[in-house]
Structure formats: C-alpha cells, structure tokens
Length: 79
Length: 79
Image (cartoon, rainbow over all chains, first blue to last red; front, side, top):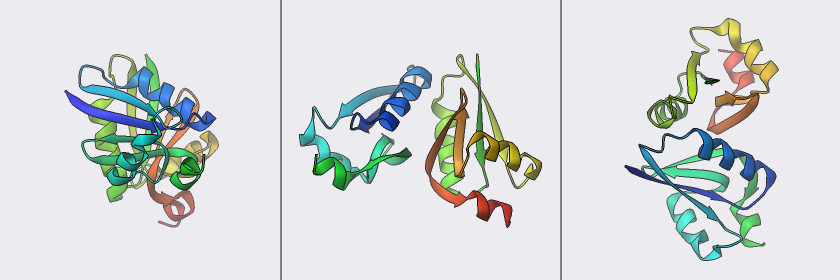
C-alpha cells in the first residue's frame, strides 16, 4: 500500500480535484490522506518540502502532481 | 464504468503522469484510454474541444485535469 497525500485549500478547483481522486484512485493500492491547509496550516512546510508549489496537489511516491491550478502556496500562506 | 482519456505527447512529465495514472486509477471504475499525440495527431482537435490546454491531461466525466506541465497544445501542434 502506497501512501499518498492530497493537499488543498478548499478552493473550487481543489474540491473538484479532491473528489476526482477520492472517487477514482484504487484504494487497494493507495492510502489517500487529505490535508486541508485551512485546518492544518502546520503542514504547509511539509508540503513545500515535498515540492508542492500550488494547490491542489497530490504527493505520491515522493513525486508531486499539481492538478490544475487553484492557488499558489504564497496565496495559501497569506490566508 | 466511466471513460477517461489521458492525452500526452511523450515528454518526460507526460510519461511520469501516465504511469501514475495507469498504476493507481481504479480500473473497476475507470476505463482509461491513453492517447499519444505523436501517434494520433488527428485527435488533437478532440482534446482541444474538451478543454485540454497542455499535456499531460486527463479528461474524465467531461472535466479536464491538467497534471503538471509538459507542453502547451500549441507546442504539440507545431510538433
């Protein structure tokens, strides 16, 4: 089982991509954790260290997949 | 079963995103077709009509998910 983390900030683009992932990833292969920066701002640095530059983004196997564009990490940090 | 189409142009970013999709999408829910524009250039207009602006991109349920950025459709068209 691979661990994947989906980072988002609640924006419409984020919510749409989150639903796509939740509905279509193979849960027998991927253990998907959802991190909403509005609720877990302490994890912003973790995401940046992983290479996340904008939200929504999926980190899987150490690789970052930016899925469409909701907001930059700078915008996320400035609230 | 939902039909999804992954459009790409063979670039490294495309190939990496293609592998992520092939390995982790739930094949009991998604019937994934891979379209490589280098082999199927006739389908470029189909992708553009669906809203694809760059590759790699996944079209699922009429929604376009641009996954990272490999090349613009203009670059794809100019070969």
